[in-house]
Image (cartoon, helix red, strand yellow):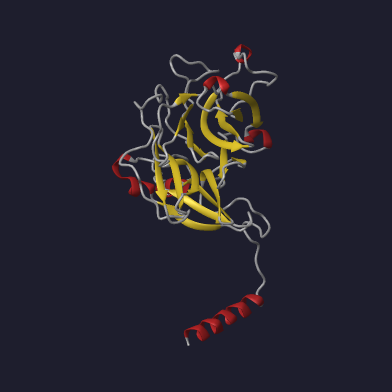
Length: 333
């Protein structure tokens, strides 16, 4: 009886819709961007899993609501992540939020700029990891053994990356993690940012770090290493493309007067202000092995949009051998 009544009701709804003229759709039936016209999402990361793309982002909507929907920006009240998925890059499903603050407890003040990876263990179980910035002071991680949308838990009783850990200091901002798993199953994470250290310069701020992860993927294995990323400011991301490590980041707004002093600049011109640049290597823990390859996306202001910080995004696959990099232009109007 229930099934019969349900089908009857569904048919009635379809007949009513067929008699109506559809109004103008806000997003557009063939427009895949933005992902959502009503849920604000910043700093996206993504994983390719079981035929769908899952996107995780900073929950700017939480800050928007705290600000009484005033539209003014800010990040101090964001303690959750938003989750979307798609199987055609046009139609998107909103899966709600992950309450990172509740999962991690008192040590977690914010959850920004996530980076997600997943793997299949030797026992055939799929595991999902989301690394996030706890403000600018540390990096945390949450884990799910069920699905990309959770439920998640905190595997640690404190932040995974903290000041005072080997190789981390001096680094102004411990945030914007970028994680990847190589073909051997080893995990790696890049992080850092901020204005130049007192011993640094505009060309070499001294705030970019990379570290190997332990087999659990929830702790650093050994010491972090300082990467020579010219004009780094924020938005670290780590990929493996064509078998090589690719480190991408957002440059600062500072002048480029000291570019000529960079001995390994090759034929690359100085990157423009607040653009996306990249470096490559085969041996990520060897600072001298990193090769600067230049700017690959100028600031969005060059394309008629508002001037602001530009963020690269990694799409993580099972093998981590092919990743795409897409820019985030704006989290809200």
